[in-house]
Length: 340
Image (cartoon, rainbow, N blue to C red; front, side):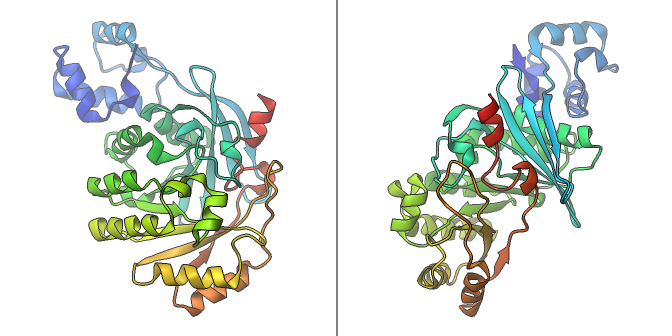
């Protein structure tokens, strides 16, 4: 069965054109899809024969809410979505003064193996489709009754390990006939797949790229993140410099603060030296504990921040949201995985 929800509008237009339908029909179908209809019969401005034809050729699935949890601390909502094949992924709706943000997953599981992240514990099962990714945005808004202003690809999975699909997803959510969310309201987080970062740069998108750095030296980063063993910090940061030169977009460097591992003064000094001359900022993340991990949150976040700022580095400390429902960075899928 054909998956229309994973087609950006130009692709859908071409697909319907091959079946003798005019371009305006594609816009009609596309708009209906991203209003969240659950059947082709709801597309009331299409002829009955066309609706029946689509129903015979195409799949139209709406993800089911397998579980919803709302934080008593800050109103963050975490959804466990069940997909058509029974696999589940999580997404998180966070409320900020500047608007509501949905953190979505791009894969069922993850194969990157980062030592401090619960999402990778069971490995990667499969990639999500563009439609399954966009559905997390659409139905988080519909189910909560809250408008979605921003998207972050920081949930389960590595976006650049599913790049072709992610690019389709970006076209769908950016389309005025789709979810109409501007590229500057979208952030994509990667563990540092250098070839894919170069490819993303060539796309010329105005989204925000966040690089999960977590250590300035190869010994520590390779211990935390297996991907570093094939690239190294120096090669990764050279790639980041090219990305900035190509796109003009500053990079956000994510840095999970782990007690006694990556929070020493010498590491702050080395990080500042490595980032010198390239516009960007460091986002310090107080580590969120995962039962299966031996790592513990750093007690030196403030000191590390002051050390970086003393070198002229722009630093922020990420606000912790949804900790009481395991919705914070690195915690997604942990409880759901155990239950399944």
